[in-house]
Picture (cartoon, rainbow, N blue to C red):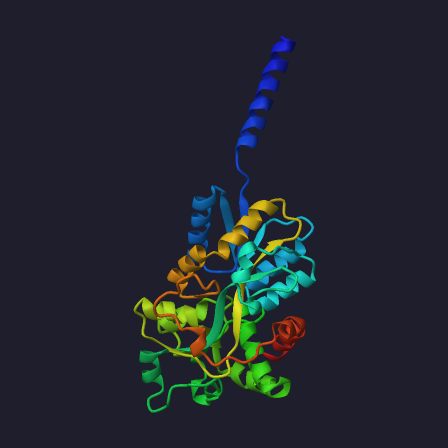
Length: 331
């Protein structure tokens, strides 16, 4: 009887071991980009490689803080999305694993880190969104804003939506846009003049484009590609690309101490491919960094936008101090 029990237990253990060996490990992704794009990219990656992929979608601030906190025992293998300053912050905290993909040679120099800890996969540019119907109802006779400074019109109070810079990389990029184009003193004067005019500071970077598109606000600051998507979907949205704007890139990085390093490298290679970037642009109107990818019709080419010489390293170094000052000054 004892031998029989031992045999049954051993057989069960062997079966579990074989099942475990036969099951592919899953790639885990922390995603800052939208749910629809994340799901489509994961599905295509799995289709192309046979590697299962799951993801957690949250704001930039939350996910960057997570990978820094979890760096000794990461819960995710990939950080997908987020502007360069956030990836520089994570790299400085020792939370990213260097990897230079064979496809990185196609990526412009401004979209690659010098140490291989992050690589850009699409271009991000800020702009002003206007819900034309609401604007004309609220502000008859007032010319629509064409520059960043035009947003400071006191008449616009309560009709501007801007994301919360503490939670969203979109809004932090906006803060740096003003600080770097105007200088620190005048930049803060601008920001502290604008803040009381803002009707809502949602945490999600995707919120302003939606709130403008649905007509809940007349004006807002958002990525141009997000506004382009709402306009393409038939919403009454006008896009303004103000002069002296910031251009940055959405980045991908591998987490330090990942247990799925080879799978993670394959996902980075995938995200730098023309196929993945064409797919992403077709969904959200982003501008690919891979020159072989095809941007969505209706997206605004970077060549048509007046960009400042953005210092991403400075933005990363200043991040804690800038956000602390914003938190204290803006109530």
